[in-house]
Length: 302
Image (tube, rainbow, N blue to C red; front, side):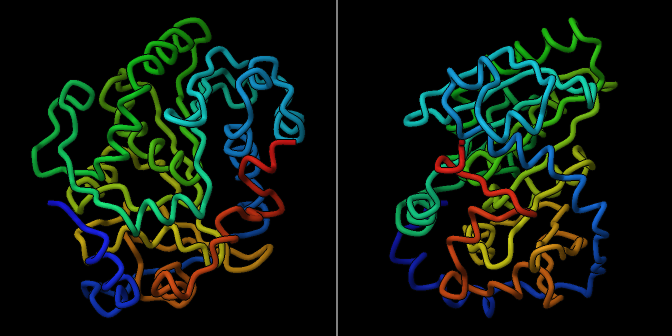
């Protein structure tokens, strides 16, 4: 299915009224300690925007300083045609970490609302056994495929060398979309005793309902964190057939956040869809944070 800019712009402001009805779902307030526990992952997402030469030596400023002992082993991308990324071992968590750079929020908003895109099948070489009803945004699928095999080889090497039993995938914005695909990819490609954890920030919808359901079943340890009135998490629209998987945490104000159950919780005023019913009600600056005092983006690599 192909979507054109005219359709997207005509319907974006009406997204809330065109959404499918949902049953009432639970919303739980997070404690301050629960919210603070995400800080290391937020710093990894921040570091993913830093140049590869700084990542190789783990000298990327505040983000790297907040994560002493991390051992980067692979960097990739050019920050232009291919998003920056890095892989390494984090002794504190005994986990392999894979982090992906996002993109400029204004440009990303335009890419999600103003250009042609379409649903695409997942590559069965990367996602063996996936059914043909599982479809994703073609641009996200292409971005993921461009680095998937190289990153998988490095992840397997580190698992063998370090004896790690967990892989943690992290990303913000477009990097969050790639990381969401990574979480499913690693689950399908790695031994079943390797735990896959995903933490994403300001992530757009990646695929259709069948894709979201597959993430739900294959990647239970999945969290997607949205900040206040960030509009990126509400695009592409549900009226186009896109749906988020489970795992929403919505920062409603500094120091306060809720966990919203289900997929795309549209019932509670504290969850993203009610806070940002359409793109006109959003604030693109919230996409950069702060995520509990931490901003994410190229300008915050210092």
